[in-house]
Image (cartoon, rainbow, N blue to C red; front, side, top):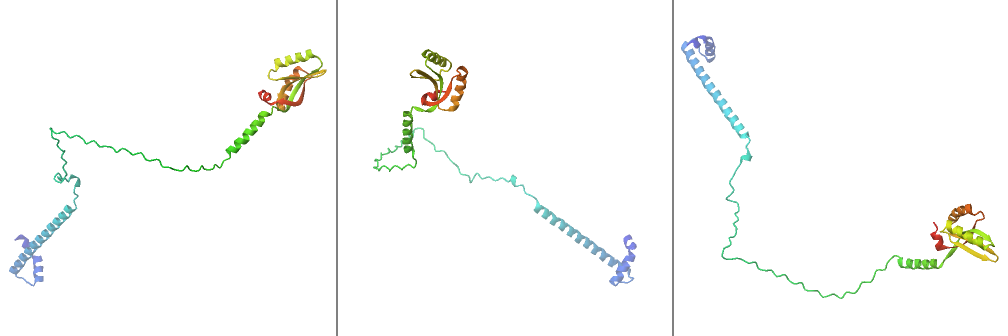
Length: 227
């Protein structure tokens, strides 16, 4: 027993602690007991380690994830089944015609016409006023304005020559000849605005030096035709 010989000092110390002294047999027996106790202790430690590993395995297996997407179950037994209605070849079913009810005409109700709502505007009265103003304006033919006097004299031929000259150069201006024995007066144009009269007066003055711009009654319709 080489191990016993090598460890005698240790066995003596153990034997002394256990109360055995200098007896080789006793020391050998105690050594065997210690070895057996050591084996049992190792077995116990090994068993505890195995139990710990088993518990760890069980825990890790409990924590493992389950793939729910791979779950499959046959539900054909609980699904409803629809069977088409079979029509016999000999019989033909004709649809029953549905009759639409004819609407009965309602009797016209005798309703009283509602009273017209009084308008809040004054269109009718305004139209009447405008009509009267238009009628009055149509009755007014002359208004105060301006005319250009181009000749004053006693010679008939000179008056006719002056009229022809004005007609050729200013066809839009109407000539007005008045005779108060023995004097002839020739005036042209119907100007309601002095601005228009001044414009034509400057043109006529270049041709006739004796031309004069004078206030006079003018024809309203003819004055509107002058541009």
